[in-house]
Length: 258
Image 1: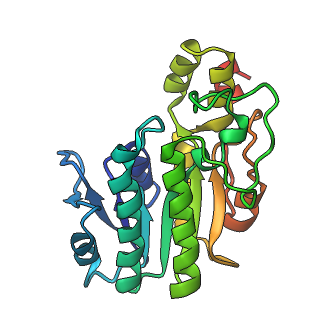
Image 2: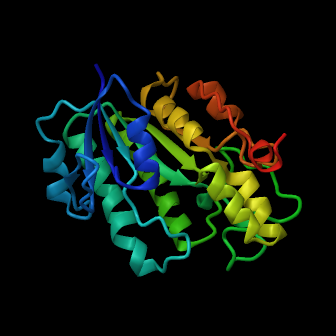
């Protein structure tokens, strides 16, 4: 039976990740205490604490979700959790002989070419360019820069330490009701972004499970994690081919009732 650890388990993606597994043994970590989740406290910026948290547990896979998730955050707000914390995650995985780490990257690592302006990271131009996992990195924010760093760290630990690494560029996780609310409050550029980047809760569970359990043909692997949106510009072909991901939802269907 696969033993899986999840950091950031109390967050939005973290809670869907917990729901994604039914037979695996889970060890959950969270920065904040929650009454409805059996998670251990973990300060990811503390390297010794992170290494010690995984020690002696026979964990196979670490799904590292813990981070400052604000795409508009300033550098000093993302540096510790999104840079130091990411190094600590990979180092803890290597020191404790884990087999795989799934790093929660982001569309913001590659989105500068398609935003309306650099100060509007959650916007999309009228005719966005298709982005594939092996295209040049193009972060749109300091947050995006930290995700580029995390993907580079994944390459280093895969090639230097032999870890299986999946850099999963996660889209915008929203329920259908939340998606409709976001669309109602946005202009055309914001609506294009929401329609393109939507990740439904069910598809989030599917792609997280695939990233954690699918046998990899090569490592590191970079993959996009969004729903099967008609208006997407992040390519899903590689995720479907290499991880066996089969998204079921589509933002156009959810919004237009098709």
